[in-house]
Amino acid sequence: MSSPYPLRLEAVNRLPAAAFVERFDDVAEHSPWVAERAAGARPFASREAMVAAFADALLRAPPADQLALLLAHPDLAGRAAVAGESKREQAGAGLDTLTPAEFARFTDLNTRYRHRFGFPFILAVKGATKSQILAAFAERIDDDPAAELATALAQVCRIFRFRIEDRVLP
Image (cartoon, rainbow, N blue to C red; front, side, top):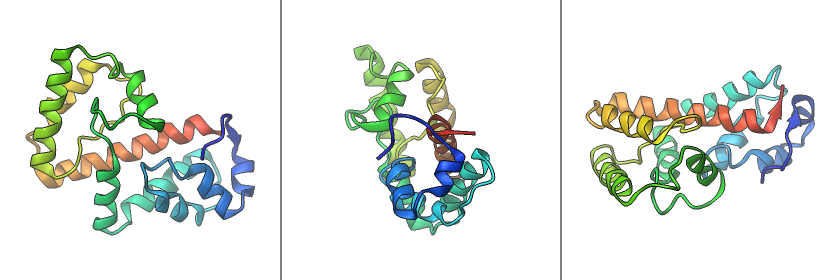
């Protein structure tokens, strides 16, 4: 459960572990275990160190946990992207105002991507436009599966950064 206002890093470091997890459990899409593992790295010397702790929790996790986190992400511009942080982020990129043709294009790309890689296309969409997102889709859809898994995990880490920067003051 995130707070409606940002916290100073000192306050984040003083939170009891359970309160830290409750406040930051949605930084990683439906995967509170990332916040639980990141909590153990406190106190954070900087906001950057907090971002790194979340990234480290993900990148050191067993492959099955990493895949579960990827699978928890909604399709970009898909009907499941209707709540929480993903909805706000996708709306910021204009994905809530697609034309029928654009929606059909996203649906086709989402389906093809999931079929090829076994998880949804993940892109940190903050600051991106619909055309940039479609270009990234087109660029990545034929990637080598191992390379694409690494790219998807790196994009999740960028999402962590954006979400933490929105919630924690340096």
